[in-house]
Amino acid sequence: MATTESTKSAVTPIKRPADPYIWGVYILLCVISLIETYSASSREVAMSGVYMPIVRHAVFLLLGAGIVMALQRIPYQRIIRWIPWYALITFILLIWAQFFGRNLNEAQRAVYILGVSIQPAEMAKLGVVLLMAWIMAKNQEPKGVRTRGLVLSSACILMFGVFVFQQGLTNTILLMSINLSMVIISGTQWRKFLALFFVYIALAGAYWVLKPDAKSSQSGQASTEAFTSTATKREGTQANRIKRWLGWGDTLELYEKPITDENAQEMYSRLAQANGGVTGVLPGNSRESVELPLAFSDYVYSIIVEDLGLVGGIVVLVLYLWLFSRAGYIAQRCNRALPALLIMGCAVFVVLQALFHMAINVGVFPVSGQPLPLISKGGTSILVISMAFGVMLSVSSSAAMDGNKKESRAELSILPDDMAGANLGQITKD
Image (cartoon, rainbow, N blue to C red; front, side, top):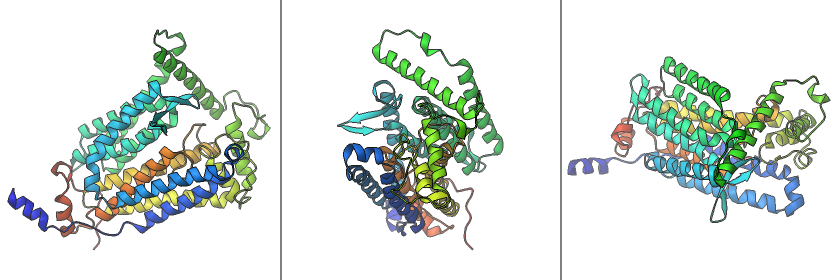
């Protein structure tokens, strides 16, 4: 024991500057967030004054920046100790929100703790990423992740997915997409990936065919009745949105359709993008932010395109893709699988959510609530995305890279033995 302790004390801990490119993306997104969410907050300005909407949003961005600065200073080997606890707390909050949460936009989404509103579905996205990286790292083998690891990680997705489904169909699809992406990133064989993919397809098909008719359900408990009523209404909303997206029964072109309560979101979002053209009308001159429901959150990308035009929309897209590219570069240099899975999992989560938001705004996906990471308003989302950036920066500053033996000894002195598998996708420098 004494020999082990003396050996560990002789190892110099890894400490390098956090990746400046990831920091740069974070800062640029925060700046865009301050400008564009204020431009999209016409309704809030009318109700609560000129400065209050931007002050509240700025406070959450500052709290998020504090989280990023704190996490980047903590070695990722210490952060992983808290992953099971974070996932457990998130799962408990999801269950609580499902039965006793506050109803927002036809779904029970929010939990109030000491007067503070928390949306567990946003926490769950990061929770499943960290938990999958933790499980996959514990089940590494020379050919990728063991079948046991894939089964456990997929089971976690399904457990979380059941409770986030009623809060938004795209939340469950996002979790499954993250899971499939991390299976590829972990270097697992394609046959296992395809098997998992078809399992998800089969489960989705079985749900739509066999889902119970909640309208005929009878219950004597008030909480169960409320849950059933909300679930029924939510399922009807999802079905109608998918039908409109597929164009079933439509004989009119989009520009010929009248604007109704049902299609107001997609219609005003398209009008905003059309009004922006190539170069935009500049921030503060948005015409559609007054009309567009949830312009400052679920449809902020439409306001960005209106304000900054096609050019601005492409710049925002490139920022997220740049983040993914940078995370991939760092992951390829990591000596161990765990830090590679952590940084890529967090990057996939942030970038996929951004792509889902953009796809909904431009009509590639059916209407569904999905915030644009770090730009849309929403305290829980901003803080969770900031945690993801903090984890990525922690990996960039404390993971052993490029086959460096001295760094590897320092890394292994802290890393649990069962999570020390080699990174199969490592590309070392000559």
